[in-house]
Image (cartoon, rainbow, N blue to C red):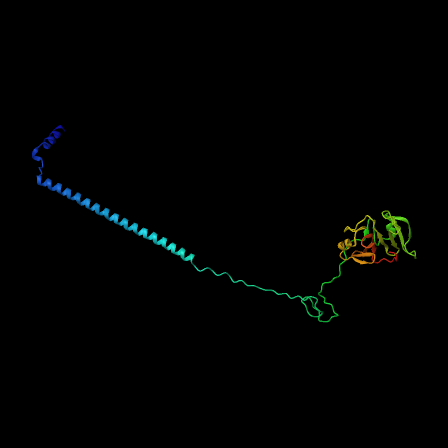
Amino acid sequence: MDDLDDELRRLFNDDRLDVHSEPVAVEAVVSGARRRRRRRTAVTGAVAVVALVGAGIGLTHLTTSRLEDTTGALLTTGTSATSTPTSPPPVSTVVSTVTQTVNAPPGTGTPDDTSTGDPGKPSSNRPSTTLVPESQPGRYGTLALGMPEAEALETGSLVEPSTPADAEQRCKAYATKSVPDANAVIVSPAKGIVRIMMPSYAKTPKNVGAGSTVADVKTAYANAAQSGSHVTVQMAASPPWTYVFEIDGTTVTTVFLRLAAGDCTTA
């Protein structure tokens, strides 16, 4: 192993084995290296120039494109803003004329008049002026119109003995515990109680009683009818009956409940 090392060392140190280059060859190699460096530099500069030119062209194109887009948008907006306004929808005006004849003679054929022209024949479509009686039972306290005498006595409201209510002594009259008048209640043997006098302090369900005015009665009851010293108000009930308000001119003095089908002359 040591012999091999010694042999190799001797060979490397042998000057005959050296390769000597000529000065001209060295200069040629150096010149070639310089040319290659200059060529690389030139190529690199050209590439850089091309890159810069390309970038400039791209930037110019991009700027132009954006300007065109903006201009297009502005032109579109301007066109929309200056467009012709839409005309409003047509408006239709309807004029309705109603003709009304006042106090027209019979048979002239007004809209509510369906008569055939015969003055003596009333129209069936004209509103009726008949007032419908109010519905309210004919009763005060424990006593009721049409109640038989025996049943009325059982209530304990009548004060005995009775007195004749008419000249024929057919009907009977009683005072009551709330009205001391001897004719407070009149009883018919056939119809039962035909009249009940209300106490002076009592009021009807519509707050009318002794001391009320005639105007109060007519305001409370639309179908009130005045005749002489009485104002009557019909009531719809079973059996039918009537309020009788006795007046002294303009003020109510007494209030009665009277059976419509009574048969006593004093009732």
